Each structure stands twice: as C-alpha cells, then as structure tokens.
Length: 294
Image 1: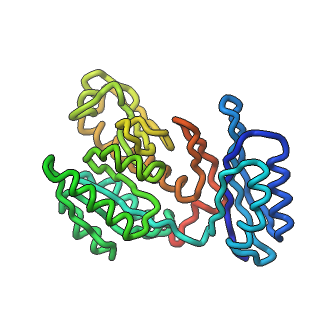
Image 2 (image 1 turned 90 degrees about the vertical axis):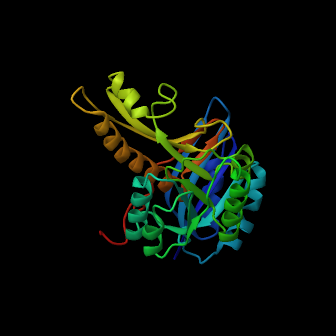
C-alpha cells in the first residue's frame, strides 16, 4: 500500500477535520498519523495527515477526489507521496561540521533526501563531496562577481529540480531577489547569540561576557538577514571553566544537530509558515528510523 501525506492550511472554521477524514475514508484511505493546530490569533488552521491508500488510489485520484472539500474550506493544500525523496542542494563555505553531519545522516538514511548538488565558494570540501558521488560545484564569489555567481547558483538549483536549499554554514549573504524567489525553500543555521553578538568571533564575544548558555537557530531565509521564520533551536550550558575554543567546539555540535532537525522537519512536510512564525508538527512514528545503523 502506498503511503501519502496531506498538508492543509485554511481559515479556521467548524468541520474541517471531519470533512478531511470523511473524504479520505471515501477514497479507501486509512489515516495513520495526524496533527493539527488552530491559531486563535490569526484565525488560521493547519493540518498534516499521514495515511495509506488501501484502495489503491494514486496522487492524481486523491487530488481529484479532494477538490470539492478543498474548495469548500478555501484550502491551500498538497498531497505528497512519502516514498519520493525531496531533491536538495547544499551550500557550504569553509566550516564543514554541518555538511559532514548532513552527509552522514543522508548516507545511513536518517535524512531521506536526494542531494543533487553541493555548491561552495571554496574548494575545501570538493574531495569529500565527490567521494560521496555527489556533484560538486565551485562558484567563486567576490564583490564584483556576486550577481553573476548567484545567477549560476540559481541555474543549478533550477536545472537539478531542487526543492530545498540548505545553507550548511555558507558564509555569503544572499540577495533579496534570490530570497524572494526561493521563499520558504532555503534553510539557514547560525549561532543563537543574535542580536547580542554580531559580526566576527561571536563565540569569543560571548566568552568575554561570561555567557552561560550557547545555542543555535535554524530558520528560513528572507531578505531580512537572520530574521526569517524559525524552524528549530537548541542550547547547552557552559561555565566559567570553558575557553573560547570550547565555546566554538560545543557550538559546532549544536549547530549540526539543530540544522539536521530543521531539514528533517521540512522534508517530511511538518513545517508550515504562519506569518513571521512557523507551525512545526511532531514527527510521524518511524520517520526517524535509519535504513542502516552505520
């Protein structure tokens, strides 16, 4: 039996859950997992449903059969085949901890994605990427060539059919135009000191101020630098005994974990944009399982 998921956003009103359940049941589908959220402040309703098609209905039939329900509630919705892996482009500069973590999780199946390309403005990780049989694209970026370089990046994204771009510590600011064109489809990771410690060496700045918590934030990229809707965050404690180098090392671990969790949520269609915020539903049973353990 084929497994699918349905994502729904619409104005809040009575009867939405009942209508969705009834429509799926009529098409021979059995719901295996469901999450919903009614935002009383915005009047918006969000829902994600995982189900199996016991009657053999495919995507086209499901979409056709759901059309009347969607129209009735003014829904923005989508059906997805859960066996299809999302195509992803990863962008990286000279810090490789997030890239290495993503590649490992991809290799063991913990992140069921199709990495169609890695783009970098440096050559540091070319061998690593090529050894994983993933296309590596070196696109140098300077102040004079930034627009041309970004045009190359966009061509690669479009040619590969990538649905998501992951900035795995890519240290170049994207243009407003690219952010708008890829709205909701670029995920970034950075330390969680903003806006306290901006600029160079944020971990040393934090050390000098005696910070006791360090962490990381993963968010969607918007034209407002580092202010896009937040997907995932985490923090760990540090003490006076740690050095600035300890801060950096501990921060690397948190960044890698937070970015991986954000990507996992996005590829499983668990993240919904809600104005300047996000709704992030819990993972479905089994979605963290790896194809192999190592």
